[in-house]
Length: 348
Image 1 (cartoon, helix red, strand yellow):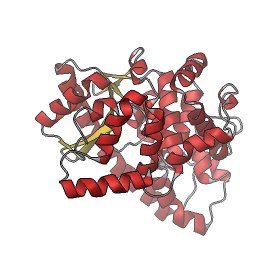
Image 2 (cartoon, rainbow, N blue to C red):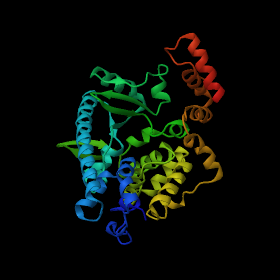
Image 3 (spheres, one colour):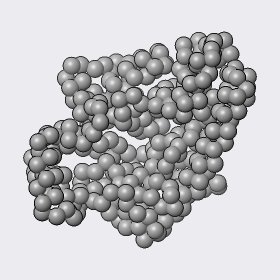
Image 4 (tube, rainbow, N blue to C red):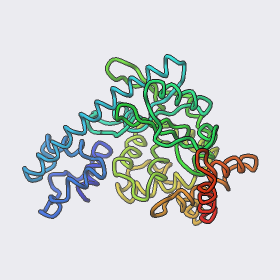
């Protein structure tokens, strides 16, 4: 087992986990380790393993890992301050939210919050309240990274609206994935139950463990061709706890997400081994599933392929509005609109 694999399995399994101190780390591995840990966001686990004596690396590498961990934790604290600020703004306006991803998992699933760094504030907002949420954040000084394609696009079709406030990125999610698998979800299902966690004496709402597992699977399976190891570890940690597998099956059937779960299970098993409960391992990938995932696994710009797949997934009554927003976004001049339309539909 590799160093990365063993780190990602920490706290997931115990009896069969190879001791990190027994894994041979040669000069070549040592030289590349820091970059790999950053890429897979396992710095916190490595720092903990160095402290406990389970990870034996050169003094130079150990210092670099600890220094990077200190930097990550300083950034994480800054993000948490922003998370508390945004939560207060939305609560004042009566907007319901769920804190997503690393900022919640660090406090609900990780052995210690310092194991799980994160890069931004991720929130789930009801589709009907996306526009109001964006307006509240803009009033507080936040700016959108990309303009809305056309009025109403965000609340109907977008995965999220990305904003920036005081150099901190805030992802306001409407659903959990881009493209067709985000459109076939019913994201308001995720507001039926709730979990909580505490930061600086304040209780924040998040998903319950079962819904966190669903989100982790969607994020790992659809986010990139090669997800970070920490995202696969999230799945393994969540699945090792008390989750409602019947509810997962019901949600996946309702959301038409069998291919997503199949790919998530495949990725975890390839990287971490047999760490998932047998009931989850029943999800496998068919040839049809792999075809439906193809738009997500393309090199380079995924937008044209995801847009085409989204059009097919949408009900007929919504396709014209989606195509118009994607092909002729507001704010482009007539010549640019023709060029955009030609380029988009050539690829569609």
